[in-house]
Length: 94
Length: 416
Image (cartoon, rainbow over all chains, first blue to last red; front, side, top):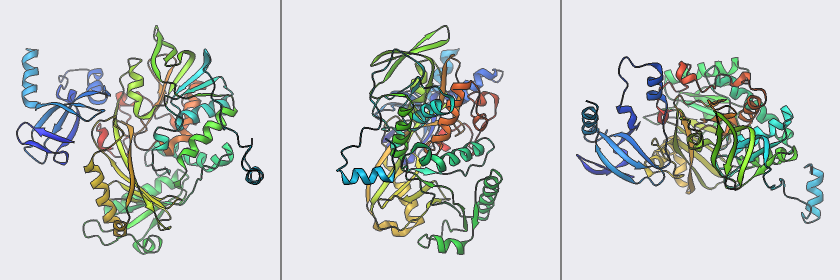
């Protein structure tokens, strides 16, 4: 698997760290209850197919990436900086 | 037919003509008392113990492929009871006892070989950790022996003790651990379950669940609808997918674990060795191949094949541990999909759907759990109560904070 970092270009899998589901971006508010935090911390869709996930280019620019990837074929469908997506999400909320 | 030396001799002399298939291939009935989804080791063991321990024979095991074609045929065959935490420790201790009696129980040669498991330590801290683990194992009633460098030199002279980066300080030997023939475990349980009247239905894929008012009453399959009072899932890497048919979301991610076998070599490694610097382990099969593996690939996947960085990691570990391995050729490698939980420990529990039960989240260590998993899951299905050695494997432990996190890495499935 090779991953095309939006800043550094196409790089080897070894430069990247896999964090997990992209739902980790959407941390519940401080006052949220047990149910929300349990869901955030523990529960995963774990799809066989397209998964939206967080990777970090740890041995490169150290940027956080939002990757859409097929978990059956390992094909990467899109990559963007998580930072952009995160601010986009905030905008959508407000 | 009961297998015995006499049968072997008789059939050997008569051209093996009277060996018969060891399980039936029945058509599914309309309704069963209990259906187990998944004809792997855990599912078959569950069905066997339902019949044997609880007298429930009206049971079907549904397997989407062929029997034993999943993880029970894709693992590195290691059996051990060297866990640390209260809850895991009792369970795997019970499992090892069942392994020791399995061949007699099933009247099947599972080639159980208690050749010993050796875990290596590379620092004073790690040796303290091994001593602590050994004491926990002994207090659980299992065996453990702390070995010095000198004792290691006698036991495993080919191990490179003076690697500059990871020098070896000593090891912990678990003599009752070892290996078993993985396919034979599936076949043995299948034959024994079949003889108790369990229907094993192969090529039967579950495509949906019949759920009314929060209660499951049957399964849609490619062989039609099959009804049941209770349904148990034992589907390893596919746990999330099967559970999603009931609308359940689980604390599980599916990852791939790769394993490797070298060409056949003369006997050289007579125990199973676990390196302590990184996750790497190696043993030698009876055919002579070195069987080894390391860590999971660390990203979500359902592809039963891995990527090269994980391969490189394993090979580097192998070379650091025993440089002589560099002369051996790797014959084949493969990957199996493992259901990694958020704390690295398994789940045997009811679900929020009445009549639907889960046995999953075995991470990369399901094989050694096979008999006890079947024993405890059958107990839960038959009595509605958790077996005493599996009562910490509840699904709600994540929500309640009673995690069984052996590696102490938190909610990070790829680090367990």
